[in-house]
Image (cartoon, rainbow, N blue to C red):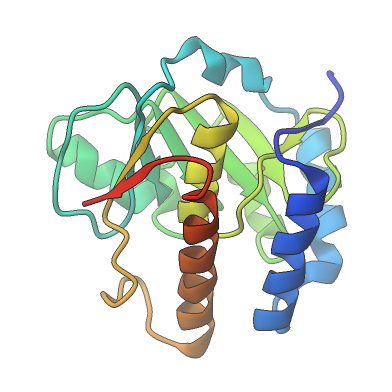
Length: 208
């Protein structure tokens, strides 16, 4: 098994996690290392499988996307978006997920990028067989830290790390409730918005 790899500047990751802990103190950050070590032990594909794709202009589809657009790679956020793309006749290349929103469809793409954190440890063993594991700690062997925090913004950070020159985002509507409406979800969306604004200083982002 290859060693873990940073795909984000560790200082950027520290900044993101400082924000996340301040905004979302009720999450199980103290178990993130346990989740990362479990992901490492379960084994995943090397990140190089994703480099076989053309990341020049990926399209990231987030729940609840409304528009389809041409792009070099089709990235679905969570099984929910992956299923909706399939219903539209489009098979996603990559599904970015932490397995909490229609996880049964997380494996419909060519590769699932499965995030391990302190609140989804019990779901990691159900990850699709073709998976790359990401973590929000220093990455142990066979895992990767790509930056970001929620599945949506992490998908865009992943695209940036893999060489995207522009990212089209379809479906990032923080004011449209999907899955649930509560304080935690609202704060997660606020954090995702802040991180996408931060990343937009380095990479052109086009929101549909």
